[in-house]
Amino acid sequence: MSSDIPTPARPRVMGIVNVTPDSFSDGGRHLEPAAALGHARRLIAEGADILDFGAESTRPGAGPVTAETEIARLVPLIEAIRAESAVPISVDTMKPQVAGAAVAAGATMWNDVTALSHAPESLAVAAELGCEVVLMHMQGEPGTMQAEPRYGDVVAEVGAFLAGRAAAAVAAGVAREKIWLDPGIGFGKHMTRHNLPLLAGLRDIVALGFPVLLGASRKSFISAPDDASRPADERLGGSIAAALAGAAAGVAAVRVHDVRETVQALRVWTAIGQAGRGG
Ligand code: HH2
Image 1: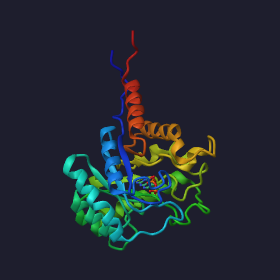
Image 2: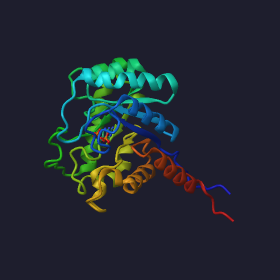
Image 3: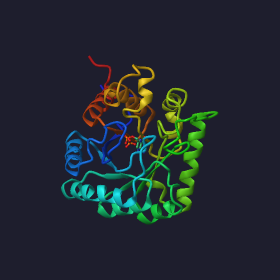
Image 4: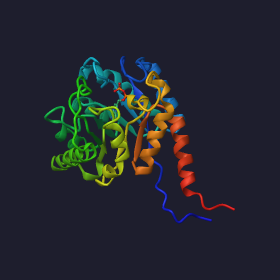
């Protein structure tokens, strides 16, 4: 017996490949090019639908990285994966030069935590590249954003910001169907007062009419309702809980470190949604 309840398709799973010496969640384990390539291959084998390569950490206090360094870390990896797999590749960078080099190497998505506002030419470069773009919300700057984040209504304010950046991107010539939105969990958000309401209010962000990417994996808000002493790589349960909250709200993709476990959770969630009454 089939269910009458419409079941949303499961969100796609974006696997994170950090090529940084100081990423908050995996401590730069993948800085070595060979290690990063091996990690990317493993995430593909585990069922990643998209890979997100980043070479600059946004962790508070992380040192700046030049465009040349980012390009030198990213391009060989993107080329190597492109040569052996058709998996869509995203590049996590705020620098238009890096996005351009990554797209030339085979990336098809520019994931920008500054929502194309870091450089004056970011919007025009995104239009020119013609790739998909992720516009993420952040309050403040990476180095200081967690000092004292303030909102009246966090869901409404993040939604208004994202709608404004999407309009700016369209005005600059980015095709509407290439635009993704991301509420930016942990980016200038109080652990519980802002991150949890944003996760609870994701439907309002989805209702803006663009695919939504949710990045909650291993973030520190997970330790607030749990054991605050747990390090980032012991937050799998909370990461999956957040991914399922995203799935229920209709997000299009989740950005995660633990691909195999997240794919399994989403498959089971989808199967439960599709199950009939039984018997
Ligand atoms: N979070 C991080 C980095 N990039 N991009 C999007 N679109 N959404 C996110 O939530 C997001 C992101 C931070 O996570 P991680 O890559 O694990 O750490 P680091 O910034 O230290 O590289």
